[in-house]
Length: 95
Image (cartoon, rainbow, N blue to C red):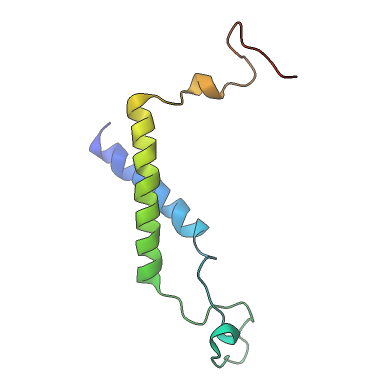
């Protein structure tokens, strides 16, 4: 795999992970006992630390990319394994 492919795929994992992790670890102003600003939504975070959030996303994305790269290298799960409509000959169906 080329370095440019590695960087592009890692960036996709990073972007996906950053969006998935958004609701975790967020505390509202009511939970911390802080004052709300007029017009502020009740669910708005009290303080959002972008550096910490991106750090968590980078670590999770690195782990996920590591699993992806290991699967790409060793071929644990192939596209044929995910073909549920055309099972290999002799495969037993539970339906």
